[in-house]
Image (cartoon, rainbow, N blue to C red; front, side, top):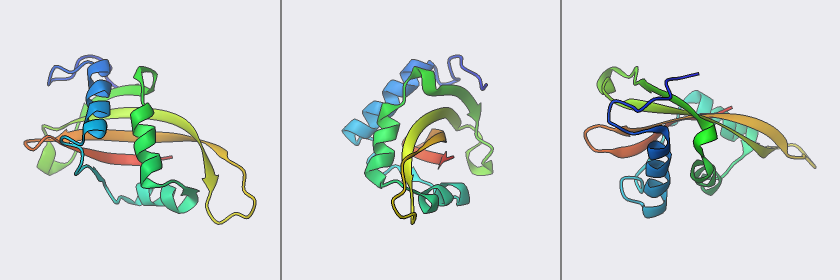
Length: 127
């Protein structure tokens, strides 16, 4: 389990979740959020049917029980960015499988507000 204390910017886990929800709901510092096209993230979208609205819906459903701590970014250009870690279990339909039934999928989600802009970035969103 990650660090679940107040992060260096002073956000508690519940503050972080509230900030995430507000960001998505209001569009402020979130309307330009990015889900990085990393191999793991793309692989999830190739394996399961999950629209952009579906991903936003999952992000808005994250709660304290899903929070798994924070860590400093390992991206050399963003060493001071604080990355928040979440796990979320949901049901998704496999892509390209005739008459497929929903499968339970545990998602790993990492978010940050890139400094100095404060724009929300979803670093990881995969199973």
